[in-house]
Image 1: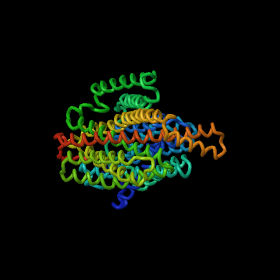
Image 2 (image 1 turned 90 degrees about the vertical axis):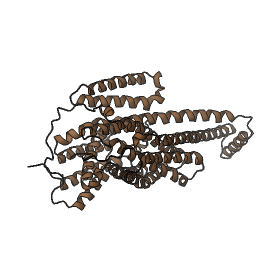
Image 3 (image 1 turned 45 degrees about the horizontal axis):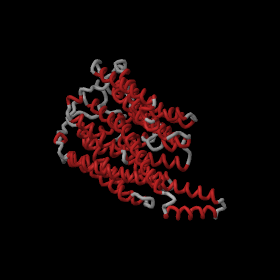
Amino acid sequence: MGYPISPYKKYVPSWLKVASLLLLIFLHSFVSGIGDITALPIAYLFGIEKPTAILFMQFSAIGTVAIYPIVYRFRSFFRRIHLLFIVLSLEIIISLSCAKTGNTTILLASGIFMGLLKIICTVEFISLLINEFPFMSNRPLFYGFYYCISKIFQEITIYINLYVIDKYDWTFIFVISAISASLCIIICALLFHKERMQRKVPLYQVDWISMFLVIILGMSLCYVFTMGLTKNWFNSKSISFSVLIFLASTSFFIYRQFKVKRPFWDLRVFKIYKQIPLGLILMVIMYFFYLTSTLFSQYVEYNFHGEYSYLRNIRLINVVSYCFSFPLAGILLYRGRSVRFILSVGFLCYAFSLFYLSYIVQTSLSFNNLIIPIFLQGVAFGFCLTTLSSFMASNISINQNKNRAMGSIMSRYIIASFVGYSLYSNWMFKETVRHHTYLAESLTYDNFSFMNELKKGTAGFISKGLDPQAAQNMALGTFEKRIDLQSMLISIKDIAFIEGILAVTIAIFILFIRLLEIHNQKNKYRIVPW
């Protein structure tokens, strides 16, 4: 007797399979520890510094990368429904613990455990999605439509979480997380059978040492690039020590992959397939431009009142852009359109978005003026991510597909994310300090305009009952805040303009890379097996 080809019970109709699957993906998007957007508001409530909050927030990505190669082993060891029950139950426990705890370390550290767990359910849902939509066996169509679904649900989740934090209490997002995981368990119990779907594979063959090495090298790298500016880089013993840990753990990890019988991550994939190194380099570059979205968030945070409402509006703009860009890119690639052209258009969208932001940024800007550049950012991300993912997955054998995927998530979630955060935080800091110094030096008592405004400000505070000295100090404090804002705005303007030039340069350069034109999409196997 063979294994069943579907985890659904026999009586479940097709329409219910599709509806339940989309509902599972949507509900599971609410299951999280500290997220990309919610980390900072929660951290501020506890008085945690921004770099520390970012550090713990990024630990979630480390958990995702570290567990990914083992996910397939878990899927073979456990019965499918039992694996989902275990993972979802652990997510409920972590969510409720976060909602009840007052310990900030436990709260922020929950991210790495959620990262470990969420990728298991994500792989399961991708497998179901491909089974219900056979056209998604094609790589471009898969990435175009799966990313469209997952990214839209992610943006909606962030929108709702920001609303909950703004209007209610931050603990509610973890209550919602627990409820969502509970609903997922109920759906799985009602629709999935308990039969084994493939031969049981033992867990003792897993290279646990390599998994822990990935966690160590990921956490040390994250600490260096996230806390480097705060710790004054190599003047800090902790930064130097973290660099040594990263180098040692990385060297041991690479050495081990070539020595063990079953590599955790078979690095030979880089030598076998020439598109893998090129794809990873372009993926990292793409993510650097994706992180320019922080310029928009920072501008909204500093320049608009009602921070949460404006940050939520950014999510809605992203939803619209993702609905358009991801499916379009997938369909164009499926029809054999030029990979170089589509990818070049993506980077040009980044360029136009950044040039537009650089041109319009000012203190009196309306949020409506940001719709076009934010929309272009979303279109660029959809085009670039779909194209590069499809390119890297072309003509990969079934045995090496897991290693290809490991490289993709490692380049995005670890290398590009950590280095990109450090790049923009340092760049923004230095530019702001430079412009602040220049503006402050120009405000002297010989400056007629400055003295005129200072007198007006002082007179205004005197009219409110302050003595002349206190009134002048308050007026000077107001000028200091205005200098801070102007310095930040000029820095955003300069960075956006330079990044726009780089995006145009890369878009042109891509047109000359012939290796990108791989159109053999005849991979017969499922990208995620049963």
